[in-house]
Structures are given as structure tokens and as C-alpha cells.
Length: 115
Image (cartoon, helix red, strand yellow):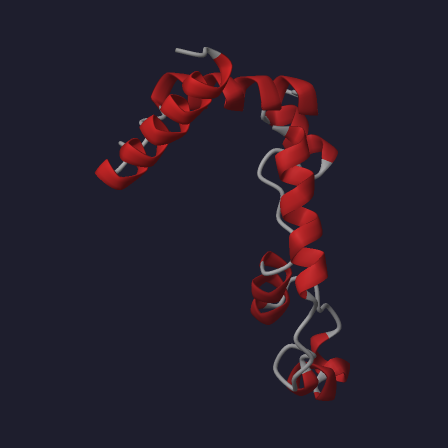
């Protein structure tokens, strides 16, 4: 579970960051003297959400983390794994996939167990 979260963050990092007038907040920067606080601007919040957002790792403040129960990453990962095991419904294999798997098994059986 934790590895999956890390891989997702790495994939987002590899994707890179779009550098445009909008993503660079050129209009907000021009208003810097009046804004004074970029972190609470709607634009900043929106674009930060587009960056690496782990599913399991808590990026809130310590107070927010404590309010949610002070669970460490291992506890959160274990709970997520249990939730998935309890609720996941895999899609059935298509007929073509089932046929291909049967052929693979039959070929292996013939190679391993001579007639």
C-alpha cells in the first residue's frame, strides 16, 4: 500500500509541471502588493492539488493529524488494505482471456507431464 502511494507520487513528479502564465500565477504575482498571502489564494490551492497527492500519507498540520486519530502511515496502510480486501469486486475475465489462460495451462501441462 505504501509503495503504491510512493509510486503514484513519483509518476506525478516524472510527468512534470506545466509552465504557463496560468500555472505560474502571473496575474497573482502582478497583484503581489495587494495579496500578501499566496498560500490561501484559490489559484494556489487548486494548483497545489494537481501536484503529488498521496492517498495514505497525511499532509495536514500536526493538529489536523491528531484530530484524525494520530494514525501513523503503517496503520493507515493496513486499514486501506483491509478495506480493499473487504470491498473489492474484480471484473470477471473475458471469454478470450479465459480461453488464452486455459491454452497456456494445457501447454504447460503437456510439457511437464508427458502423456
